[in-house]
Image 1 (cartoon, one colour):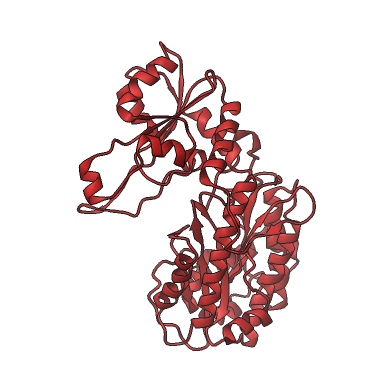
Image 2 (image 1 turned 45 degrees about the horizontal axis):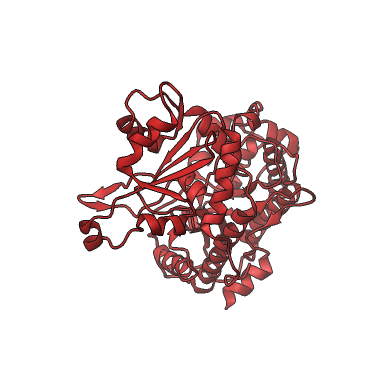
Length: 452
């Protein structure tokens, strides 16, 4: 989407979510609280990030709020921090009750000192309350002896949040557009001799420039062998001439994050060996994106990724034998040790869809994301090939996969590090998924961007 396109208001998106949750849990009042502020060191706090559930239900990004929903009375009550002179002097203005009604679209706005009396009215006696972890302490203090229930609320939120509505999709497209701008800037500016953190600074500058003040997760900027570390966070090495640079980074907009990985040559052109490995990963990713359709089981998507990667690695003489055998024996996982996909939304590893969607694990496949794809699911597709010394030199793995993995040849690729290509896709009711990412990834297109 163009960054200038109009976006839904936080209040309108959240209002629809509250109504959906009330229909899902009509039996008892629901209480959800803001995430606490966290100390970084001394009296310095980490940059604040609202809990994802509170964002989904209210759109409020600041700390100190509590939401009460009651299906019996069709009521919504927001409890807000009290205005104090100290807060105004040091931190600036916070909305008054009247301003909060307008900003957040909730008519009944009260201060936290009214929480106890309100809870006593909506949950008299032993009537239960659905309470999330962030509201539990405040509720216990305001309403001692209240009967609190947490599991059903957690499951309901997981079930509802996994399917993205039109408003959420618009916010995810905004995050993706900003992420695209950052990745393009990194491709254009990366040069041998720079430090990884210098490329990171340019990448994240464009995120901020496009209106995304926060990251969905810590950016991975990994040159050469560092790219073989799946969650590399140092970002401090100098980029070597002839190396590949793997960047896994996503901008966050109003809580919704993108999650994109691109791997490209620091010098602007792939050499023959880099291109061969890159094309294996790219072809596997294209096959998995096309397959990510409503009704497919996530574990089958994993098997497809491993099969395509095994076939590609055989052509490079890094694996030997039939693709099915290489998948069954897990020989391919020497080069691809992670999952092909995860859900995406308000969390970079988003909710899993609740108990009713949970599938049993298949033998030998241990995945966090275990569900049948449905329209509205936002997921990543992220195959990779890595040359990890700890795996290639492991004596047990060498014995287990002797004759299947060409360890000697693979050791000659250690300096390449790894290649990962990751896009964010939205599962559609019919046909292939919608790719939200739109960052160049064909070899010629990547080289053209780097050349600028």
